[in-house]
Length: 243
Image (tube, rainbow, N blue to C red):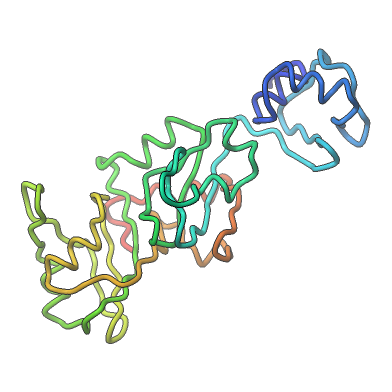
């Protein structure tokens, strides 16, 4: 159980500076249980707290864990340079509470992207020691062949990498698509591996992280959702969980 002054609650949820949050409350723009609260110093229980700002409902969350179905044309950066950033697809409160992408997808890569303001979660999901499998569907310029699949499974040598990198799983889906499972998460890894094997990636979509699949979330491109307990458990993806 935790109790906080209402202005600090709003500040922690990304509604602005503490001064701005006080003004929101004192102007009558914040309600709890349908009742307008104008005392910014009112102490409230945060556990299970539901409130509204400008009539929009919110639930207090100490940290947020978000799944986004990333469209093409967005950068996984808090300071994008050439394309819009993925944070522009979320409510502005998330940027103010320091939500950031967990790892990166290229601007033209689509699919499952995790985002959070929990540093421990971000570190755990990004750590190569966790061996969390990530599943991609790649379309190729040239036909997929059994030889290509074998090369990717055996490992290909990439520039600046000391040892060959291999797929954990690689399956041909049709003549120009394959499913590839990786654990390393190197820069442009799928595209570079395909190029090293003599082909070229034309489109790339990440469909699963650990055992959390994009299909189960039901998100259209550009849509997002909160991740809760059981969904977060699916992200643990140990070495024997292939998918």
